[in-house]
Length: 216
Image 1: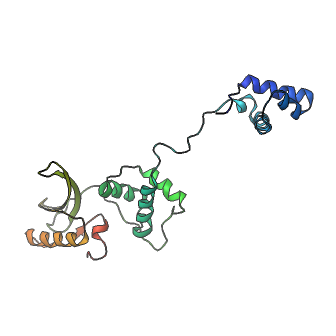
Image 2 (image 1 turned 90 degrees about the vertical axis):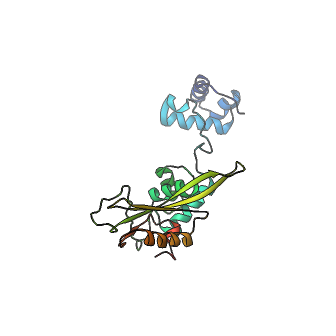
Image 3 (image 1 turned 90 degrees about the horizontal axis):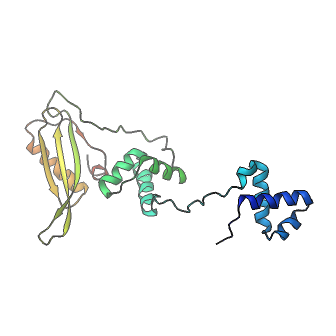
């Protein structure tokens, strides 16, 4: 660890150098490294006494800094699904159990040159509340919830609960699956069509990976 220099000591060294008109003699006589002396001199010239006050060291890594694995997931969602910071935040919490902030996601995107979406990608509305409709079946909200259950041996198992709710009648249907896939999402919608006592017009999802590609 380097030597700790007091503000008074630094001022004395700098004042002696100015009085003698020789920087070299001053830092040699006071046994101060050349580079350190010129750092003091520059700081004192720019900011006065405030410039040579010892400052707290800056941590090389912030304790809440995103891990490389989380950053990779953020970049993957941005690159392949064109999600915004808020949608990425929700996706990480919902599907990976990773809690972070929208600002942290945004900073990660900026650092990797992905601040803006491509011009040919449309923005998708983010729905934070259910809409009350007058006609049954006009809008069906579909969500997926992660469940952590205990088996007979006492261990933990993960299951995925698919839920569909009609915005007009609040009639709902749900089904639990072992896997979270597009195949199961399609199977669930077929199940909902059979169970709901009215014709379905629109199914609203959050466009997660289970509602991509094969899902129509």
